Length: 91
Image 1 (cartoon, rainbow, N blue to C red):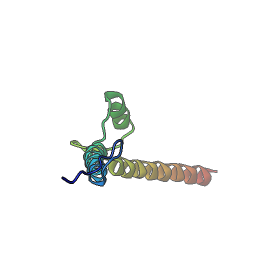
Image 2 (cartoon, rainbow, N blue to C red; image 1 turned 30 degrees about the horizontal axis):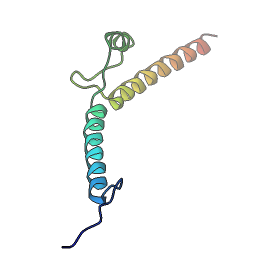
Image 3 (cartoon, rainbow, N blue to C red; image 1 turned 45 degrees about the vertical axis):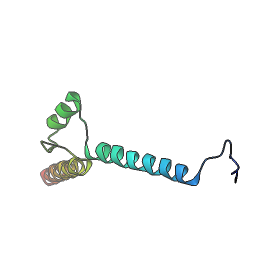
């Protein structure tokens, strides 16, 4: 009868690869869900709406908020420039 040596305390390569695959799959799922959603508290939503920053209704994203914020800043810069020009012309 042939006896095989038993390895004690060693992990098999298949077990390690399977564990890594499971961890990667779960992290892919969790990060996918986390990055798609942008949770807002009521205070943040109210603050953004008071400042005139538009939000998407269903799932606001960083890009939509940054785009609307950029537009608002451009409007404010234009207003400031116009007021400065009016004051300069008034003198």
